[in-house]
Length: 520
Image (cartoon, rainbow, N blue to C red; front, top):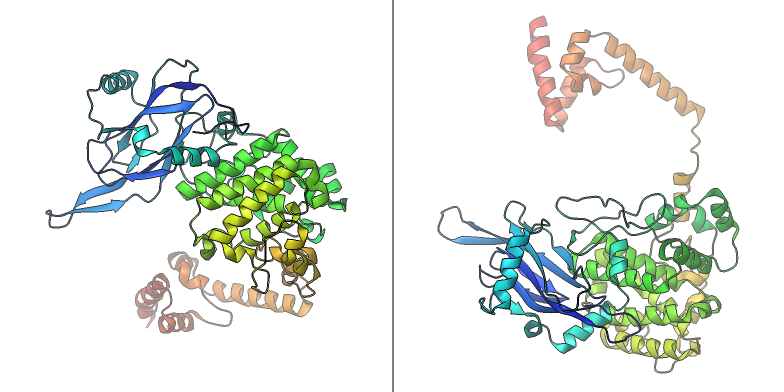
C-alpha cells in the first residue's frame, strides 16, 4: 500500500479481506505487484490485509477458461484475452474495524465481475475467516505471500499516489479497471471527479489529461501528429493559444507550468502520482492509454531547460526517484520491443533529463541522479550510449560527464523537422517531417486534370443512361464498376477475367445469365 511522500509513519486500519470467489484453476493474480497462480478451485482470496490510512491495494486478475476438448475427455485451458484490475482500500477511518472486499468470477464474461456481493454474504465470509474456520490455503495471509522487501518496493513505486488522486481519475475503492486506448478527458480539461466515466464492457478505463510534447521551435506548434499535443492545443482559448504560439523564451517550461496549474492544481506531487499510476497500470494491465500518458509526462518534463528546472528542484528530484524505482521493476528487454517503447522513446528523454539535472547543485537531485545512473549502467547500459553508440563515462557527476548531451547539441546533421538541440528526440516521431507539407496545406490541381475528370464523369453518366433503371438497381455493384467508354458486356468480361471480388463476379455472371442470355 502507498504512503505519503513525506515518509512519515501512518496509522493502520483494521485487518482486511480481499475475496475473489469462484476463480478457475490456473488464474493469474497479482496483489500489490506480487504475482501468483491459483492451484485449487476453492480459492477465496487474501486475509489480514493491512492498509495505511491513505494507502490502497491494486489487484489484477487474468482468469482462465476451462473447457472439455472435442472428444469430451481431456480438459483444455485458455487464458482470458485481457487482464483486469481492482483498486481496493477501506472506505471508513475506524482504526479498530475490519473490512472486506468481495467479488465473484462471472463465467459468461470470463472475468471477475464489478458487482459487489450482498452485505450478508460479505459479513458471513468475514466472520468465517476471522473465527479461523477457513484453512489458510484458501484465504492466504497477506504477510505470508508478500515479504517486507516487496512491501517496501510497492511503497516506493506508489509513494506519490493517493486515494484522492485515484478518485480524481475516476477510481474510488472497488473500481474495476480495464485496459483502454487513448481517451483524454472532457473538453473542459477538468478532472474526472464527479463525472460519469465511460464504461467499457464491465469496468472503467482510466482517463488522463492530454499532455503536450512541444519543443522551442514554432514549427512543431503548427504541425504535429502527437495526439496529446493536438488535444491540449484544442482545449486552449484563442488568447492562450496565441500566447503559446508567440512564446519564444523556454516554451517547455511554460508548458510545464500550465499543465501543473490546469490539471494538477499546482501540486507537483500529483503529477508524479499520475506518472506512477500510469506506469503501474501499463505494467500490470498492459494498458495502451497508460503507456502513452507515462511516455508523454516523461518527455514533457525532459524538455525543460536547466535554468527553469531550478524553480522545481523537488519535482525533478522526484522524477529521478520515480524513474529509478520504475526501471528497477522493468524487464530488461523492454526497449527491444519497438511497439511498446515507441522506438526507444525513453532513451533521449532520460538523456535530456540527466543532462539537465547533472548541472544542478541541489543535493537531493544529485543523490537521485547518481542512483538512476547506477541503475541504468546495471540494467540498461544502452541508454547511456551516445548517438554513435559509444558508452559514456558517468562515474563523475556534473554536466561534464554528460558528453553525449554536448555531442547532440553540436551535431550538424539532423533529421528534417527536428530542432538541432533535440537530436536525441528524433526517435519520438511526434512531429511531421517536411515531406508532409501536402497534408496541412491546399493542393493545387491543374485545369487540364479538372477537365479530364469532368469528361470522364460525363462519359460515365452517358454510359449508365443507356441501360434500364431496373437493371441498375438489381446489379448495383456491376454498374458501379462500369468504366468510361466501356459497355456492360465489356465490363462483365473484365470482371470475370480479373476475378478480384466475389460479389462483383457473382453479379456479372448473374447479369449475363439472366439478362443478356434472354436477348440472344
